[in-house]
Length: 113
Length: 117
Image (cartoon, rainbow over all chains, first blue to last red; front, side, top):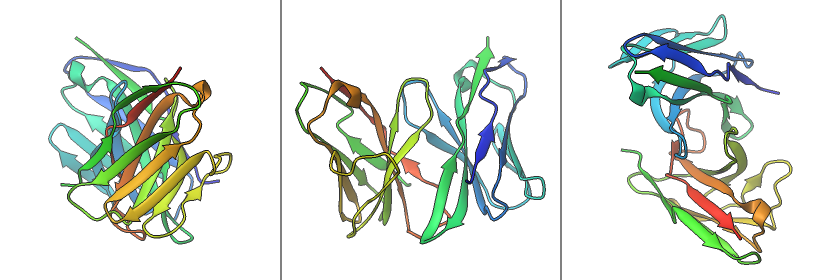
């Protein structure tokens, strides 16, 4: 069973701080990694994709991937109350007939004003 | 780019009614579309994977005769909840990906909130 694990939280950080969200995955053959943000009552929204080891930065967001440790993280700098949401880690692993996406259960983030 | 439109956004209907939900990819061809269900404060649950021109693949425990999926074109997939009952009330979300063998992410529609009275 291929798995993606996330701490369910809630993770609470003060406004302006760095929020660090972590994810581990079980399938060493996984090839692409995504972070989605889901506000309460809304559908998930893609915020970051990462395919190779190292860091990828986009504005206040940085995704970090370490395939050897099977670990992917998302850092949110200068956290804002509007960042309060559930963050889903997703992993594409090759499967019969194509790529299967496995979603983690999500980490709830609260940014306190 | 990669916009997915889902309609309707909200449905309230009586028990026993069948409800159709549409999912369209607006600016790309979606060979593969996915249907999810999400209960309040719970994780996304994949219901089925739909490939254009072929039968959908349902996840274990999902009744294919209850949740009819049609993916007739590269831009449209529909989910019909047949003879809906209160326990079918949930948030249904579709997503789409460009190619069956793609390593690309899924892009989600805005979801449909279904309430069965």
